[in-house]
Image (cartoon, rainbow, N blue to C red; front, side):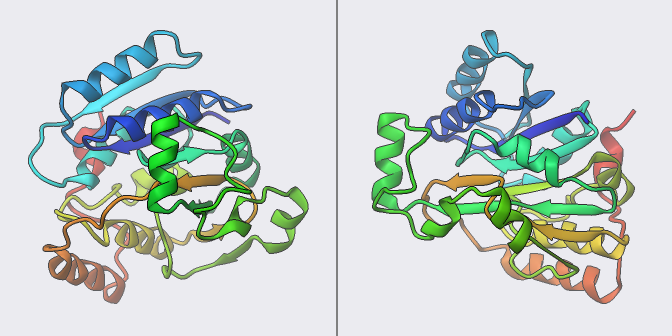
Length: 262
């Protein structure tokens, strides 16, 4: 199975550097790493070029013009460029445990999409991690909000991972799906502009298409750096778009990934 790791980013090169480093240090390497850049400055491009020069796998910079928060568009362009059969999607403020790709590969199944385990790092700890450029050693550290999520265990993962067909609690900062399934529902909906609900709407269409959600516990660990809350001024419009998809049981969006596919 060929896995493409996609990392979304916007003007936070310090966090992206750690995210990329953790992706490149995986015990099981992805086929490629694609940075889905929503219009960052040249300093972000410089970091990506520098790390790509000596990387053991291709590191691809998929950048679009900065026209405001257009996460759906950025992700669609990256997925369209991906050569992998399976997409693992994270945010650029995520640091990966060394077995992250291995765990996602082990839990992949046809007919499913997957959400991995997220560990929340508080503000002070996040500042320390960025300053020290730390990639490990979070379990016994003060400043971890949900410490049990730091535990990686194959036995516990088999016991406590679960399946359902609900959207509640979906977060695409640690998310995986088959590329063909994303294309079948036309990817992320680019009518979503500004922060909020584009991930839930994407999930709703995957479920309406017939897929089952799988939540991994105690495997596929991702450490989420603290950041201030995003601007939510478009949330009301985005909520409306989500509700239309849910009520009408849509599994296709008109403005999606198809415009970037050959």
